[in-house]
Length: 116
Image 1 (cartoon, rainbow, N blue to C red):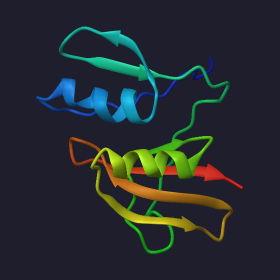
Image 2 (spheres, rainbow, N blue to C red):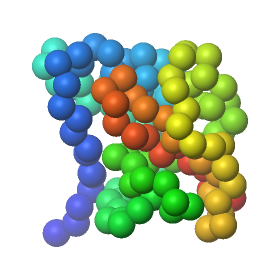
Image 3 (tube, helix red, strand yellow):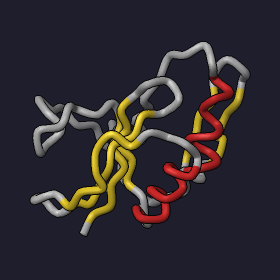
Image 4 (cartoon, rainbow, N blue to C red):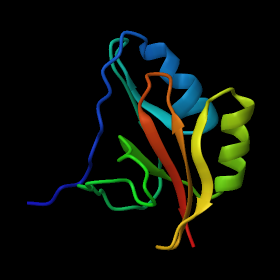
């Protein structure tokens, strides 16, 4: 047996609000939309992961979701332009990532990062 996908599920009564954050800004595609649930995906050839943490690193809280991107500066610019509130960073961390924290439309803390 192999785990092939990890999906974080966020409960909300404003499902449509997710499209501005996940599809428009992060350019994820809608893989499924049943009205009451929308699943966003990418075609990136990455392996599924899940992390268990006591803190988020550098004295930050543990984020609800970590999203790795290929151009952090561009995503940061788009988040700010779209009016999403950045709560931390951008910061270059001692373990080799550059990242920032932002809240999605449902109040979830999102760690947006790039390696190296």
